[in-house]
Length: 490
Image 1: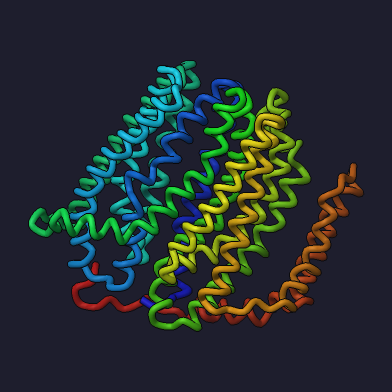
Image 2: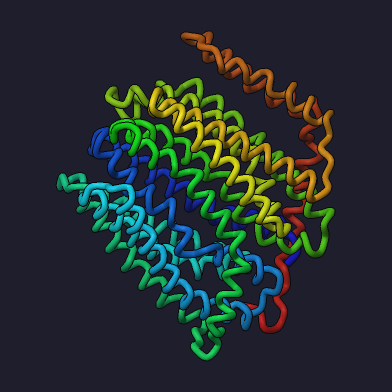
């Protein structure tokens, strides 16, 4: 199960192609909802999705990530089915804990009864998803991402159709969330029936409760990552809902929706890379480091231009997609484009730290970043509302990326080369043109020229070469699928 370039691109192809379609559907779905609900109702919708999303990790407590890494270390059928049987049972009482904590939060924050009902409806959808993820994780551990691709597409397409029908019939937010929850429950049942035919569920293989607790204890660092990650991304919406107006929540999330659409792409790389990195960390550390740095480089090279394009054409994007009533979302989108930049810097190093058994460090980084965001939100939201939340988001991502790079260098003993940083700085100079507004055809030609110069400097600075591309292509052509051992999954 060593790193296999062809298998990597095969799995990446599953995720990329399906998620391209899913992202397009979600993108259009978001536009429809934003326009249909208006700023205030869309703010309520955003809160109903964000509040359970912030606490969703309680229904998993890091179990999925731990199982993924453990099976990747020793990928056998018996071990896979052992974790499958125990995870299904453990998710039942974890989901109960999630509901109880969420109910407590709703009571403490004194949300209205209407909002509380909407939040609980969303919670049902989240619980259904956490059970479906058990099966997805088992296949991901064996570097088979077809099931995740199938589930993602069916789920996204189904919800898209449901939303469009609800908008057509002018349904309420309650009706939309209820229909989504019912659909996801039906999808889960179908998906689980298919899964049970592939994996044997054995009650006799269940661990004693004390051993299950020991397994959860081992998963706590991953749980902390999940808690802080969800908290990190959802706290802005929740704090805006209490410190500003629901319309401000709607404006902020309209801009943030576009940012999250781009975050998905490096996220695919990280998901596909994690099982292989877990194996390489134990068996070939030098290759582990080389693969991490290579993918970090390519992610930045490919995605960085999107950041500056989002900044430059934020007004065009917002007005074209959401209309004039969301013109206030232009400024948040410009600010959040910098958060996108820092996210790209962090993704590969974060995945590497998790694969290298340094998940506690990742949780620490997220905790520090989330704390800074909360402090800044308390200071900035009362005065600047959604603008303040956007600034806090950028500061949080900057700390997160800096911490990931620092911990990767210190704990995995990799020394960053300052000359490489200078070369990167030189390459980025042409993209500074996008920080200024130029009108008409000459302006667009200047922007195009800056992108061309950016690509040329990549080669000139030695950050990428024709030889490197050819070598990668040859490896791809000559890669063979890993041979399964007796007892492995078919």
